Length: 114
Ligand code: DGP
Image 1 (cartoon, rainbow, N blue to C red):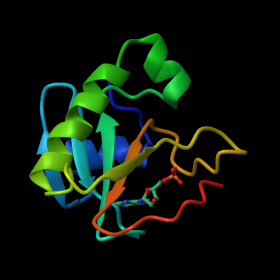
Image 2: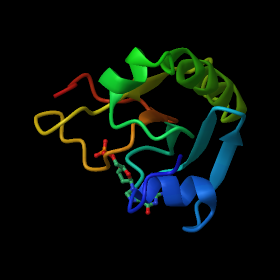
Image 3: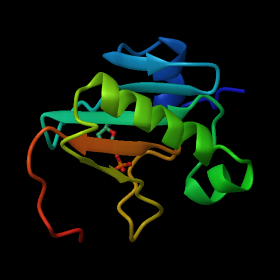
């Protein structure tokens, strides 16, 4: 199931080290290497899918959002609030071709989304 030459598949497999914050049967989550906020976690499906279009088509988004809610509580930002982002494709500036949600929080985030 892992995709050869996929960075996040290698992280999930433990071939590349990461700071894991959460794992269940379907989901793996770890801290972003270049954090944009005090809490910046990447939430990825263990199954390799390229982006949110493929993830939605195979019913993975519920598991990812459920994990995001659990991680937000674990990180202590469920009450203060947070942002969940998924970049898709060229115009969305997706740089890793394995679906991931960015969970950002721990400070007041900017109103600007773009
Ligand atoms: P995106 O641009 O939405 O595809 O986000 C990819 C994110 O992945 C970006 O915020 C940086 C993060 N990233 C890239 N390489 C690594 C890595 O080797 N380890 C970790 N923890 N994060 C990485």
